[in-house]
Image (cartoon, rainbow, N blue to C red; front, top):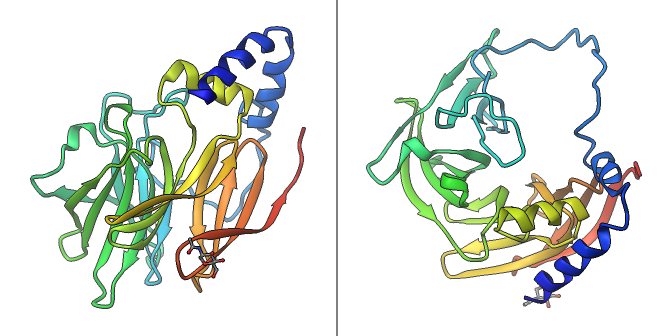
Length: 267
Ligand SMILES: *[C@@H]1O[C@H](CO)[C@@H](O)[C@H](O)[C@H]1NC(C)=O
């Protein structure tokens, strides 16, 4: 409630600053003209026309890609179709994408709207895929088991929690254990647009297990991608508007402490 009041006061105050929008757009860096550049080693991969939102590559060269995100304020290339998870084998000379079939009676495919994703491989080499999903603009995490022979994903579980209201990305620590970013604070679209416009630093990172859920880092304007170092000691968080990467040290009790920040001030 206190945050709502602060926002309303800022809303009134901001009417006095007419050039704020241009500064917000500069910070987003998403409304600029892009110069064509020659990328001799890049190839267009057919079959990802609806966008590639996130990707994770397994040590064996298999890549999972989430595609078809519908997100407020961002252009959707296939607004009438559900999103999908694509698989690419980077060992092939000319890799193509294959849409993974999703099985399991517990999952509503028609509202699938995948965003960030992450994998966890257990000691039996079973690969779990955790996917941030936005069915009807809500936020859930979907747990799938990857079935390589059948090129399919078996849906095991949908995870919801009040501390996971506005998810963007996650990094898996176990089949049902992860750090996830909430990229904004307000669920209400009107308040949320003001939050973004003002660049308020109310976005956070949450640690989740079935037994314990808590905020482990906050104070981001828009916490976006999150990942962990291969040795599991450090967690990296991208802060969108500030153009910064935050490095946190991960402790045995899963708390995070800030270590360093890298970034370039573009204001
Ligand atoms: C977690 O571990 C860190 C580092 O050992 C320690 O400083 C911190 O107090 C611990 N926090 C909790 C809540 O146990």
